[in-house]
Length: 356
Ligand code: UD1
Ligand code: UDP
Image (cartoon, rainbow, N blue to C red; front, side):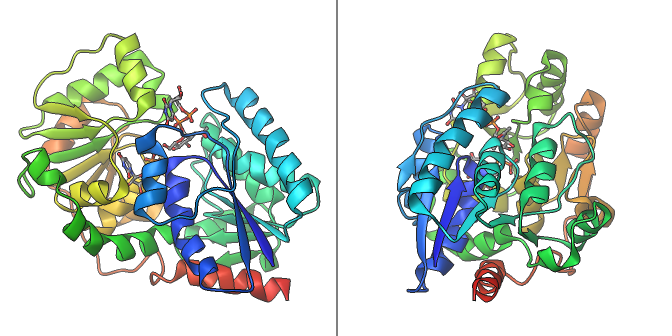
């Protein structure tokens, strides 16, 4: 069997790492990796392939830094050419980026079955580019690998046939289990940044709705400046550009650093007092490492975290951010909500079963 994996953005490298490891264990399956090139800085792309031992991509389309339509369109064209040549039995796509949609659409039009990892997540906010990508990808896919019960429920409500939906858990939980101890041995980021365990806040900001609105971005950085301890921010290149464009000055103990590799990130997450983020992946990692999370959005796809009280939604409201960086938030539940850490195995088993 030949599987073509389409990836392009940071969180997809992390998700695909675990499934690629599983594919590599099976000598009857070939994996062809297409990297769309959407993320391209060393610390947004190649560092993950190296650290997480992901096979080198067979193709890199180098399509990046374009508007949504131009990026998705050019990716679609590039992926289609490769699929015609490679003739895979399956196309595997991850998450909700433009690379996800382009991969699913190219395959569906060529009648190649598509499997979507992280299917069924919804924010119910169609202004988010990710929401559009998710809905379309789910409706183009032949197998929908849902990470949570809520995701399954969302797919059922949209009329996706039951036999296409498989609840497998979350591959990011597999990654967290696999790499957390490794990070202890390999990362020296805390010493490098002179940080003491549980005495700093870790923050990430990159969502279009926050970065492309100068008022919201200013509010977020003012809110973070009020924290009574250092705030470390591995800064996404999108946000870096916008801080410069809007001439936003940093105050308080806010400390910007370049984006870090996964092992350094895990280390920063595990040891932080609190995490403030608008990232999808980081919200869950906060939960995996039992760190309270403040989310810089008004809605989330990972609603079970909010229901449990371990994640608080504050949007870009400066006052709420100020309160929440100081307030106690629950950080732990015994409840297992993201599978057993064997999601990659579940995914591959299902693909093989359907193929045979
Ligand atoms: C993309 C995804 C988003 C995901 C995020 C993960 C879409 C629509 N958005 O957003 O869902 O949460 O990735 O991080 O697909 N840039 C660099 N170097 C890089 C990567 C990006 O300079 O390595 C710059 C680009 O030139 C561009 C900006 O960052 O100006 C945004 O990049 P883009 O890939 O369009 O979207 P993200 O915000 O990264
Ligand atoms: N991440 C990382 N280095 C960083 C910031 C994030 O390795 O400097 C990891 C993080 O641990 C998580 C993933 O990237 O696994 C989340 O990606 P991102 O926030 O870019 O996208 P999202 O999950 O919001 O789509």
